[in-house]
Length: 185
Ligand SMILES: [Zn+2]
Image (tube, rainbow, N blue to C red; front, side, top):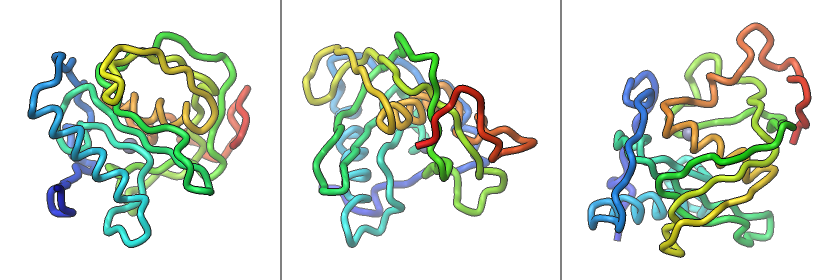
């Protein structure tokens, strides 16, 4: 259905990545449904062995230059079992833990080229978040209560909808100084 060439990513310093995304009207239009199908193709394919894509666990619509409140996440474990798979439409964060977590090797982003400066460092995130969104697969508004790595990915993608990027959370002076009240994953 889709091909590698159909996916065009926007990278820094493109300013569109700093825009706030807009609410999506429901039920989904054909256009928005097609956009989500493309996001699913892109991320799913990026986890296949012979992919041409940079590996990803999630993508937000703004990363194609489309400022709509949509992100898609696919997380699998080491045995290839699906841990999480859904596209969230109009997500809202309705709760979070006090405690934080950070991935020990830092984060990466399809919109931040691997050669982009100052992207190394801890990215503190809430250890658990609750979001409410319209589920692409269940076709209804539902609550997502997630923790650990999944919660980190949720927050990374949610940030995109606010025009934020993971590099904004890195301590500029000492990027690898362990942040307070934060467990390293
Ligand atoms: Zn990203």
